[in-house]
Image (cartoon, rainbow, N blue to C red; front, side):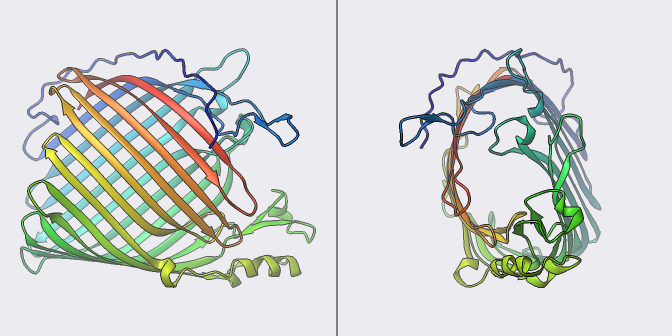
Length: 451
C-alpha cells in the first residue's frame, strides 16, 4: 500500500441557487397522476491524487523515482430532474442527472484538461396496460461518464464512456401474484480518450453493439416477498477487435505493426434464480444464484486484417471462453433495520462482465453500508467496498480495489441542506504487463436545494 504523504488542506467555496416552490407532498411537486422532483447542488471537491499516480518511490539503490502526486480542487454543480406520470392505462418516468466538474488551475499547473462537462444520466420508462393481464413495457437508459486512469499528465487522464441500454417487451399477468415479461434488447457502449488533446477531437478507443432477448418471471407468494427467475442472451460486436501499439496502424494494417491486444466478438447467456423479501420485521434478504457463459469467436479477429503469423499468435491467447465454475455466480444482500431511519447493509457479488481491452473479467465484490438519521436533521451515510477483477484473454491481470466513503447531509431548512463528506480509494494490480498502484483521498462539500 502506498502511504499518503499529503496532509489534506482545503477550504470549499459553496454557493446557493435559490429555488421557490409550493409543494403538495414532501418529496415532489404536483399531485395525483403527475409528480415532478427538481434539485440542484453546488459545491467543491479536493483530491490528493488527480492523475492516480504512484508518487515518489525509493528504488533498490536508494534513489527516488517517479513523480510527485498532483492535488487539486474542483467546483461541482449537479442538477437533477425527475418526472413521473401514472394512471390506470399508462405509467411513465423520466430522470435526468447532470454533473459538471471545473478544476481550479494556477500559474504553476494547468488542470483544465481534467474538466468534465459531459457526465449525464438519462433514464426513461413506459408501461402500457391495454388490458389488466397484458401490457407493453419500454425502457431506455443513457449514461455518459468519465473515469480516471493512471496517467503522467492531462494528455490521457481519463476515459469517457457512453452506454445506452434499450429494452422492449410484453408483460403478462396470469394472476395477481405472477408476472412474466419477455422481449428484446439493444445496447451500445462507446469508449473514447476524452482529452487526447485540448484542441483535438477525442479519439475513439472502442465501440460495442449488442442485441439479444430476455425473459423474467416474478412470483409474489407473500406480501413483500417474492421469487424471481431471469434469463437473457446477447450477441456483441466490437469495432476495434485488434488494438495496435501505434494508432497509425489502425489505418495502415502493415506487417510491421505490433499488436497490443485483441478483443473478439462473441455472445453471452445468463440465468438467475433468486428470492427477495422480509425474513422478519427487521431483517430483509435478497439472494440469487446465477450462471452464465461467454463464447468468443477468434475468427472474427481476421475480418479485413492480414498480419500473418503475428495475428495468429496473438489470436491464440484470446481463444478463452467463460465456462464451468467461472460462470457460477451469486448475488446476496442483507439489510438489518435498527429502526425506520437506521439501517445496516451487507452484500457480496460474484459475476462476470465483457470488457473493452480483453475477453472478460470475473469479479468478486464485498460491500458494507451504514445509514442513520440523527435528530431528524442529520443523515449520515458510510460505506466500504472491496473488489477483485480477474481479467482473461490477451491481457491477463488482477485488479484489487478498495474504497471507503462517508457523508453528512444536514437539513438547514425545509428545502435546503448542507452536504459534506470524503473518501479514499486504492488500486493495486498483479498482472503480467502492468503494475499500477495508487491512493487517492478526497473531501467534498456543498449545498443542496430542492427535493
